[in-house]
Image (cartoon, rainbow, N blue to C red; front, side, top):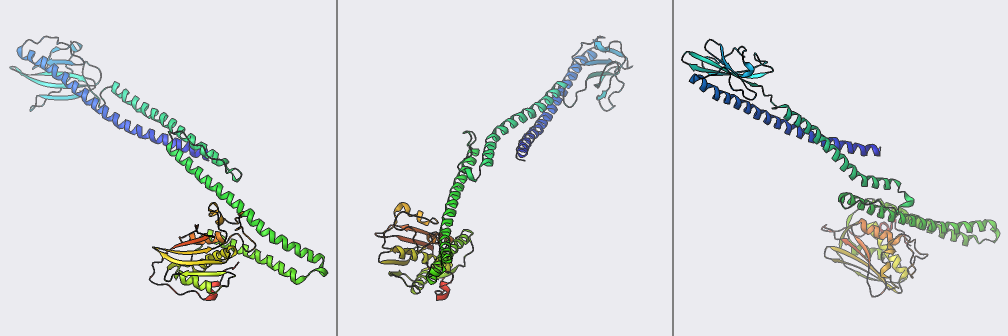
Length: 467
């Protein structure tokens, strides 16, 4: 089918361009032939006029010889008042009058096409003139070959030849050029057809500098393959990490249960059950986070309502207990359009992360800057190296530093927080601080005149997993 499509494009373009050239050539050739026909007709009339100019003075002066000078492609006869031939050009010598018609009484001129005139061959245009003499009107017949609308056969064959040659040359040139242009396209198609998930490192070839548009296409395809390869590697890493994180608690739980079944009398069942429940909680947390990411990746619609970000954060802090000091700097009337449950989930993930790595306190601040609402969560822990500030937002990220994912988290909290920020047309970044890590969330301010109050305590905590 691909070869058929390629040939179809090649044939359609070749036939199309050739048909256009053929139509243009036909139009130009028709005009050319009409011009040639008009020119030859004018030349024939000039020959008739020349024969008139040479013959009429001889008739009027009485010096008319029996044989008149022969003109090129012109036959002449002179008839007296008795319609007897008294003079003619050599080809009509001794022959009767070539025609019998004459000009009507109110005119001295008439013309007709005779096929053929008497004594001649072929179709000719015969001109009849009255020449008035003392004894009555004489007749002067002048015959010239009839000129067709296209002039002559030489012009006709030339026009036909051009109408055949030009489309043929156009077809050949178009076929060659399009075929040459399709070679790099075929190379791109062939390469793409061979690329599979196991060799995403391959790239399509680029064309020479004369194919700029095709080079742009090849570069765009290669950029797409770059992104696809990166996404595939990230997916493979994510799948590997998720499998490991799911397999680890499952393996531990299975080992504990098998050991308990093998030695039921020696098993501390309450302790074993508590350990299995802990593993179940971890599995549930990982699955919950994976489902949350799946919904965010699918761009599930948000339940946006105006909210005071400072009051929303303060209300959440009031409902939680922390092992370290939480310092608040919350500005009021910082209004944003947000899905409250999602924003609370983002805040909880940032607080959980900060609490795990803080030394003594966590600073939470909310303020409005221009048209942007800013939420900051900063801890006084070891901090994050600049080269790792984007990496920590990857899913199941593991760092060598002290902020590696520990037993208290799933490795998905920061990834979920950033996805929630992006879903609200905002950003979540790590910025410089004197000590520890400072996470900064920026959201566009709401255009609404007011905001509803904070969520009910139970509603605010619905669907939020504290880890």
